Length: 383
Image (cartoon, rainbow, N blue to C red):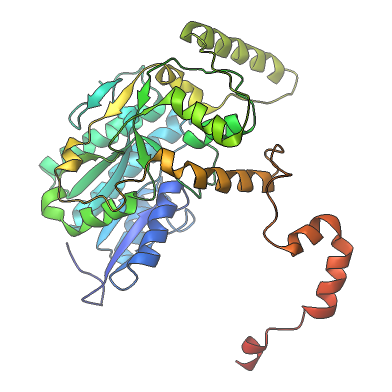
């Protein structure tokens, strides 16, 4: 790995997509765990737009990083133009810049590039066809181009595929967290799946440890694709019912809706929403419904390659089930504060009395602040 940073003991990296769950978790890890050895910069889209090749070239030329990590993605429901620019052309231009600078490029991909099935290996992938969703098509094309550039342009890259990601601090209600939200909001009356449908899950908290290890061991991981998922797959129905149990709710009831009925309902809602849009009422179905078929079909990723690598799981006992209590508290508190759900207003107390005063006695709180807490900070005044 090149060392362009002035300090011989510290390397400099650039993270694209730092505002998402995975990007934010990476940024927090390197800021708190490796401040003396790794500096990670996460430029906003105003400083570096992944859709602009000129931005990429100018920023990386100026910063001269030792590595690049790309976690940026277009929303899964994006049109073909945005998916192409962000998920494919953006990846291509980052890879071209990394190859020119002769630095490692860590690319985060998705299980959407894989077919359904059990114990899928890293060499498995879907065929590239027009029928693929824009999201899956662009992610798959990016994987193929990175492999081609490794073989022809000397690109030092590692591709890491994630499955269903779970973790705290996801600012968007999407993926697993949309499933969780639907249960908490009591908007899932029955189970839109069938028994024994299994999926792999990826722990966001563990992920930065793997990325750090990959960066420090380029000889082993260069030019490779890895599945980063928990060792054991999870039955979707069991997970939903477990979340229901934690929330002490009566729904969803353990009634399994057949796939044919689910798709008919989806099509009916799509027609209804189109009719409503003609009279000025705009609404849309969650983008995740494009993956409705996967709710009824198993997709599990092999962990053998990860298991025999030099990486050691820092939290081997942590799974989606062991994390559920923390996730329940975190997201219920967050969604309640954002007025997204009202079910739990009475059972989640505010952490301090000032928040209660804000709710119940705003004028008294304002008077108290004015009388006692508006003087300039003394330590800053001394400066």
